[in-house]
Each structure stands twice: as structure tokens, then as C-alpha cells.
Image (spheres, rainbow, N blue to C red):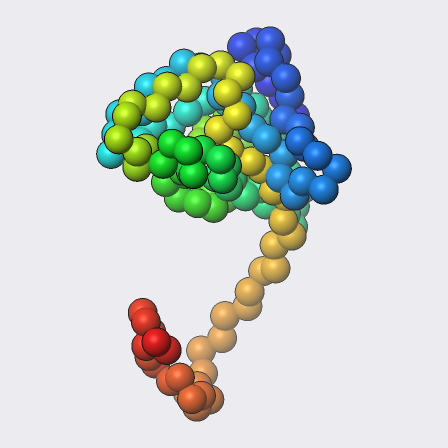
Length: 139
């Protein structure tokens, strides 16, 4: 991990408890997200993720419950070959502007293994009870 000077003045990503699946990720800049809008929020963090893994950025449930704030593309994926700054796409579904200050925890990071798919074109697909029904077709 590499951090910008602004991020070095803040606590690094950390797990809040021994059983936490995600490490809390903090903003390193001040941002205001108006209701109904979103912003890319800088964290000042740069990661080198091992090949065969990804980092998923996930919302913090407390922000969602209390403020209506979540991540626009949850879960966001950081690929193992990305070397830029980690930014969090914060969206405000609440009724009031959401103010973010440096050090505010805005997301959590979860390390996940990636299984690479092989694609082969074939003649057909097997039949299932559901078939091609989607978007609420099961009730």
C-alpha cells in the first residue's frame, strides 16, 4: 500500500473488530454530496492487489441507515492490475447534503478471490424449470 501525504495524516485502513469482513476506508478530502447526487471521493490509498484477487468496495450500513448514503456501484471492484488511487463513488439518497471530512469512514474494502471464466460457444443450453424468466419471474 502507498498513501498520499494527506492520507498519511489519517489512520490507515483497518478492521473495526476481530470478526469484521471489511476494512474501513476513510476519505482524505472534504466533499459535500447534495441530495440525489454522487461524487468520487479520494482516499489517498494506492494498492497492489495480488493477481487472482480483487478488492470489493462496499457501503457502510450505518451511513445507509442513518443518512441514506451508499456507494453508487456497490460493490465496486478494484482489479489486481489497477495502480491508481482508490476513489469511492458515494451517492446521497438522503434529504440533506452529506458532508465528508478527511478521516470519515466512507466505505469498506473486502479482499476476494477471482475465478476466471472460460467462454465456449455451444449449440444450446440445458432446460431448467425457470427457463429464460427473469426480473421477478419467480414471484
